[in-house]
Amino acid sequence: MLIFSTGGILLHRSLQQPRTCHRLRFKTTPSALPMRSGAGNLEPETGNLLMAEITITPRATGIGAEVGGIDLGKPLPDKSFKALRSAFEAYRLLVFRNLHWTVDQQVAYSENFGALEDFPDPKDQAEGHKTVLRVTNIDRATNTIKPVDDPGHKSFTLGTSAWHIDSSFRTQPSKASVLYALEMPEDGGDTMFADTTLAYDSLSEDRKRALENLVIVHDFEETRRRHKLPPRPPEVQAATPPARQPLVAERANGRRALFIGSHAASIEGMTYEDARTLIDELEEICTQPEYTYRHEWKDGDMVMFDNICMMHQAMPYDLAKSRRLLHRTTVAGDAPLAGVNGPIA
Image (cartoon, rainbow, N blue to C red; front, top):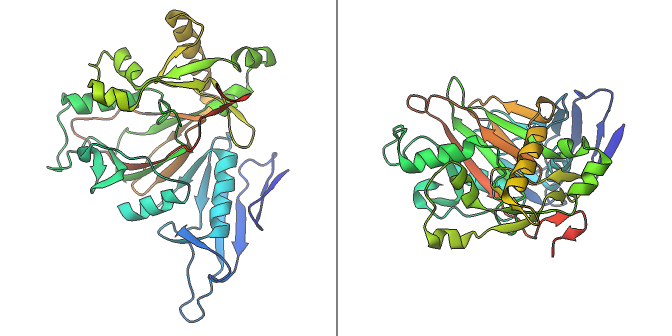
């Protein structure tokens, strides 16, 4: 049995019972406990927090967990935040259901985990929030489905359909993404996730040693080149130059992951062809069924996932007829990615 503390709350996980539902109970007062954006109901007369129960149900495959019993639209007590943070560290992907978030609520929740990345193009922003990206085939100005052959929409769709890690091309890669579904197709439009931590764990010790000191270069332009799309303007490329990353990343809890995806452009010391062969081979390992999770979206779902070890891709749907709208916030990185021997030189 694995037991880890969440700041006064203990979360128990039975290795023999992967579907065990973990219940966290607490009662406290706001004066003794800092409040964050999220959950907690105040008694109107005393100001005490009502008895709260958070459930964390791991998926049987070991990829992710579903969280219930928490209202993420209200202030989040510090103990609840610690419970979520511990669950996120352990399971790397958390699923929440039946949210009714405003854009402000999504931003406030996401900021609990750190500063957020900006999305500079106003047409991509949700309601003018520079930290909220519209992931959609719907034109914001007309509220109609974009033409399938619209150049910007085409390049975005091709990019999201490839296995990728959000912001892996940044010098300080992002920590996490928060993806919230507002309007989803009846058929298709799911998101696949691949856990590169579990994939790394499956490798032989010799293979791990062969990979652990490799430096991989992530470049946003690589995805465009592979899909035969025109390059971005030079001034746009200059804002996100290629970034050197450890191929084997080490997370804060010591677990290691393969840091690959569609932005992976080259490996130092290898020819492009040899690097491409290795990257494709590792991607094939990471995307085997036992390391993947397919999220079938319903309106109001939110999935938060670790951008150090979770690749993802959007699944096909009828782009010409079905509406698909999600809002994404991305928790910015605050340090270079650590490898087996720390950040690369």
